[in-house]
Image (cartoon, rainbow, N blue to C red; front, side, top):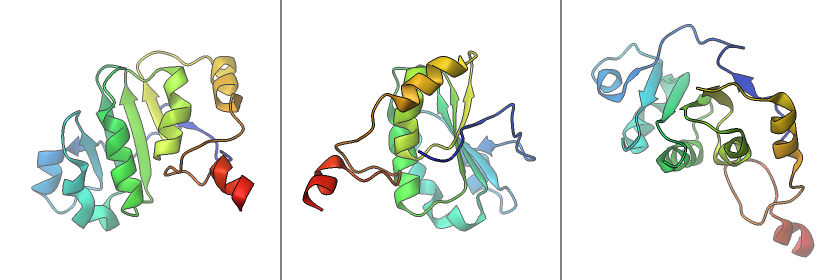
Length: 141
């Protein structure tokens, strides 16, 4: 994956993330928070002014935030994309594939367990928002 993981405590963002409704109602906010179930596509016309999108994961089993990340990255969003909430260490590799580059988990993350999770697979079968080349393309290049 190359890029180091960023955790909220490591690099705090200057501006607190505002709700999606508040963001859409003002023109000077550069950080927005998407709650589970909100449509990330509402941000697409504003990507050029957003520095941080914080995506809420209220429960580890709620996967809607993965879709939000993928929508934003595929639309060209290049700013910080933070997964916040009930983020488990074994989800972080998949979240990175969807485009998350920053994390704010509720529970502490064991660095050794995270390193093992990130190193578990050398190849992937699907294309994703990350730059990894799918194994089928490597074979048939």
